[in-house]
Length: 300
Image (cartoon, rainbow, N blue to C red; front, side, top):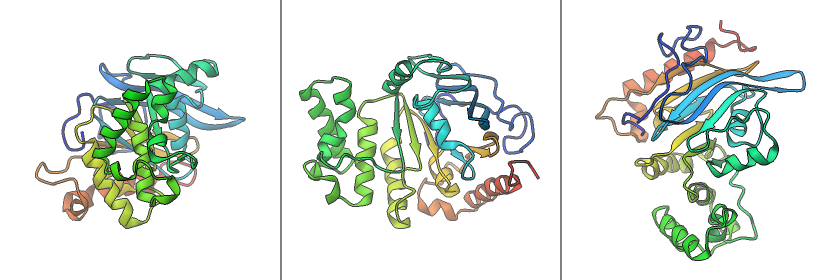
């Protein structure tokens, strides 16, 4: 993950991975790859008469970090809601390792069961103000019926690696924004689900706090075997954290390009990396693809 070859990667076709309009950058894939922890195949979603997403195809392998970037309104958060089971797709299939459930036309209770295999961290920490840090962190385990003793042990063990041991008894209002996001990630990771969805988790933070948490997240997830899908508007964040960047266009939302992050093996994934020539070149390439998408999502 994040600089090392993932156990399983998805390809967006056979042409240049960053060339919009080619068969391989249009969002079409060869389908779910063997060993993929998350596979999205031909997914579409409509709201009333509007097409929000169209023919979304992607796979995320074990230990792989994939970022989704695109303009506001292209359906990135909607896609995460579909993957998590909050919404049901109008077309296509979404599968997670160990569940292999097609979400199309499933009722609400069946979709809800899928939340037992997907962790979802949103931009707002959504901590319950009447619960302590420890009580917020253990919420997912409680909902699964994990015993109190095991829950307490797991919370304390992970809290130590998160730098939260000293604030387990604190209330959310007593924490900084950065600490609250750590608690939110603790809550997301404790159930040990195979798939982790991150919807702009640091978007509401100031630049200094955000950069520190990006580096911290790299360290926390460096040896993780989870399939991670990040939504972000920050191209630098996508390059810093991800193994691959998928670029979306709006009206309707669709994947138009894939950029594989290939930083030199001697380049550390940290803030200093953003000043290296290869990092700057990747940023220019991704921004160029985004700019070539017109206001209605048409390639210019």
